[in-house]
Amino acid sequence: MTSISPVERVWRYALGVAALLAIWSALATYYPTVLVPSPLETAQALAELASSGELFRQAGVSLARILVAFGISVLVGGTAGLLVGFRPRWHPLIQPAVSLAMSAPPISWLVLALVWFGTGSVTPIFTSVVVSAPVVFANVYEGVRALDPDLLAMARAYGARGRTLFEDVYLPALTPHLFAGLQVAASLSVRVGIMGELLGSDAGVGYALALSRIYLETPRVFAWVLVTVTLLALLEAGLVRTLQRRAEAWKRAR
Amino acid sequence: MAPADDPVLTMRNVSKSFPGRPVLKDWNLDVGEGEILCILGPSGCGKTTLLNLIAGLLAPDAGEIRRPARLGYVFQEPRLLPWRTVRENIAFGLKARGVREEERRQVAGRLIGHMGLEPFADHYPHQLSGGMRQRVALARALAVDPELLLLDEPFKSLDVLLRLELVRLLVEEWRISPRPIIFVTHEVQEAALVAHRVLIMRGSPAQVAGAFTLGRSPAERRPEDPDVVHFAAQLYQELLAAAQTRP
Image (cartoon, rainbow over all chains, first blue to last red; front, side, top):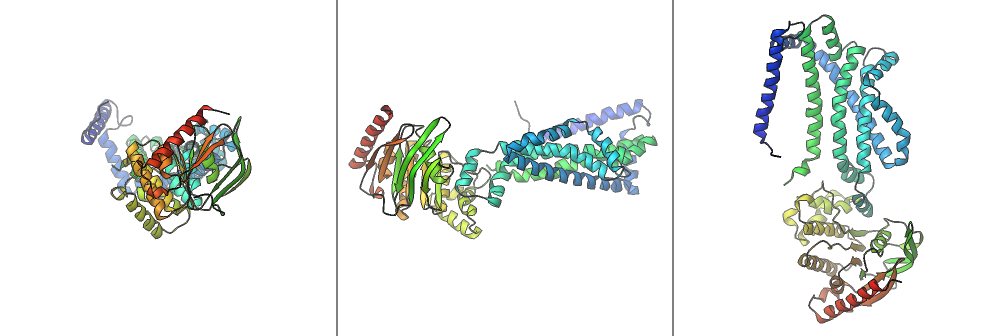
């Protein structure tokens, strides 16, 4: 397989985006605005939302909820993954719950959350956590099971315990698995969180999306979708990838 | 140097078996102050198990082991932390013992000098050759100022010249601070060069097929000395005999 240079890569990305915009524009000329608004109309809607402050208000609400949900998922899933990883006898006890959480469609958790918590912040956060935490758990658990026994024996021979053992041995060894889980959990937190707001909240990007749809303000619907994509990019590329690059800086030493 | 009155390590009637395979039965061993003990034997005769018992990585089924508190252990593979630099890897044992950062840097710096690792101090293991990695592993073991140094065929995968170079480094370190060493090896030449006493193991459960000594100090021996060559030849014969006559 031949690899391409970073510069060429960027060019090709730009080309891909341009192709997408071209197809979008073409469709928009054939269909009325209420079905497919043009990129320009979408940009105008976005600008209106930004100048009225609506965009940042709703995006702020969603981002806060997403971060809380992501944080809880990482904490709960990560801790459970570590605990069960070191005690494999617990795994069959906890796996049914994990399978249930992962295999039931997210929308069914949302319906239950609506029944239990009504509309508000808890419903989208709860739904996000139920869907994302098992992913973090599964990855961290796999990581613990895959720890190199030779390296652990070395650490034991030198008497490493507690913080040294965690910081110098476990955590760096788990990094690849952990970040694989965080990538998926980040994207799930955003997508399920917005879905939760759409059906079960009175604020946030998902709520604004639903409202725009009801009023047939399709340019705004498109604008909110772009906001959702931006939130996902912020969390995934901005937070998770940056942390991963830092944690794995040693791999790039030449 | 014979086992002293007050040995650094004692094993009394130690037994260990893995499912379906007895490895050691009623095993006794004393290692004295400053003694270099070599253990030779065919593959799979329990040499690594013996070291793991001594290091406390395995618990004996029966018997008693008295070991010093500070151990250095060099494994067959370097077993370095891939995400830590040479300096940090060397200091790992010290960090595990709660030694402060300043002192860790000092000790690691000194060993980096002794081992000729200066150009690589801030490199990561994947940037080093196999010989350099094993040098780091040896430095990590020496950094804790071990009361007993365990070496499990540490130079196995290296070529002859590199191996002799590392053996020379080891003996040089021992001359400066003569701590007891248990050196498991396949190589009769290595054993003849460094050992006060050589034990040849064989069988399952393992028995001592013979114990051999060379009086002259390891610090004065050279590979081409007649007594070293003769000792190596003797060990080779004994090892061969041990491998052929399985009890």
